Image 1 (cartoon, rainbow, N blue to C red):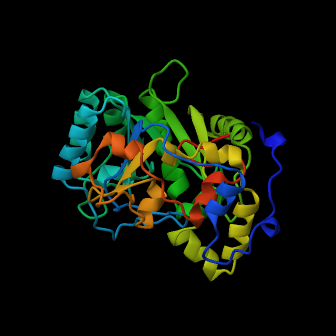
Image 2: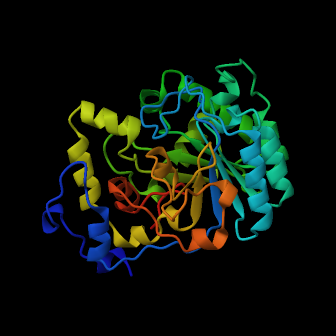
Length: 344
């Protein structure tokens, strides 16, 4: 099935939908889509909401003031899950700035011993800012990532300073560039290296990302010509209409317009590739969710008793029903959006 073969519906074609109840499942029904988990090959673990930044688009509402941290007991239980389930090949560690969890280094080392592929959602600036609470330095991170062959996934809203700083804060762009150069220095981003550096693009406003392929080409050209920077892939991710970004839309009277933009761009092909079909998201307290966005909305997996890492059952998680909401239109608009970029 291709996008050219599908006549995408207009909002006016659907039953009247009012804020905040944009009916995602009505669109699934229209295309006879039954979205069940296909495999669970990734645990995405939010190990802290503490961050050295407070970005405008952050769906986690992370900041230097947050105190939530995953404890050692929960992390040890996750290691047991990884050891028992060979199907789970990837560990996607996120936050906040995940490196600010006091057990971060230890957990990466232990997970690598289990032959898991480790991905870290690294915001680049934490290397220079360090821990905003304790003052602990994080200058060792590029070498640590390289030593343990960690895949680094880092947000860089644009290859120009103005747009990046507008979204993430003054001075973020220059620190990000310097941090990427340090990663390049230890081998990240080069064609003949196993050390992968992938950048993430979020639009700076209430619109959908442009073509991932064309943006990647632009980023590679501009960052190389201006700074001598190399990276592997660019992921385009749609700004999700929840928390900080949603509040900003409402404050400026643009929430309904943005939601209609997402709804009218619903793509059933993109829907087939949504990330909740292949991952389980784990909250800092061990609670399980269908995805990171559901986690931030406290939409827990709904299969009988409360699901946590302490009663994790792979077969039950594979046979669960995914919990959807209006924010899911963000993952299915246009070419789709996931933690690995476009889905189409």
